Amino acid sequence: MPTKKNRLPRVVVGSRTVTAFDRMTMENICTQIAAGKSVREVMKDSRYSISEHTLFQWVDLFPEAAEMLAKARLVGSFAFEARAIEMLGRLERGEVSKDQIRAIDVALSHARWCMGKWNPQVFSDAVKPTPTVAIQINTNALGSEAVPSLSQSFTVDVPVLEDS
Image 1 (cartoon, helix red, strand yellow):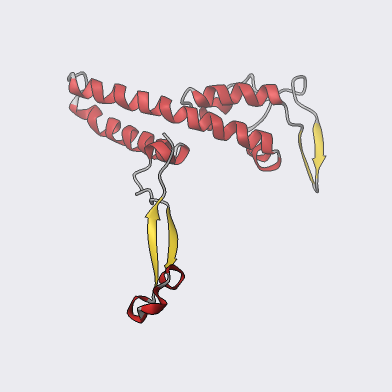
Image 2 (cartoon, one colour):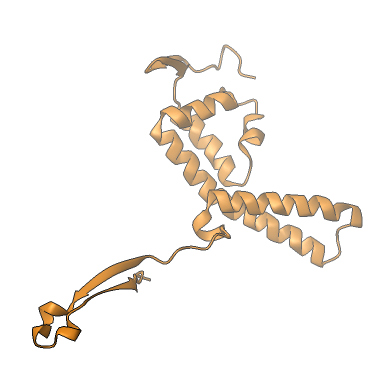
């Protein structure tokens, strides 16, 4: 718990009084989140002069804090992936008792959920839609006045190719 000695000053933002945003504190917290720790785990560390509630106030009120947390979670998704691979390796090598298998299953489900939420472009199971562009072709403009049966308009959905 923060002591009065190391507590950050309070500021008024709009109609709310909150702890002043401190970039260094936010960077330190985000570094640990990027290493795969949860916000709750990080905030248990007594060296931080803010509470979990204050952290989320910062994220809500200060775009820089929100961006820092989002980037930390993006990087943290890969830490969760590494942890999941490590757990699967322990299972494959037979280093896990039958009693531990359920706990590992729950941990893997949690890691999979975090990875999908924190970095959906890489880890989401959702089907990613293929972007398309509708192109309309009017055969009247091609000189088909002479042949009325060809006088039509067609719309074709064409997939958009991404640069790689």
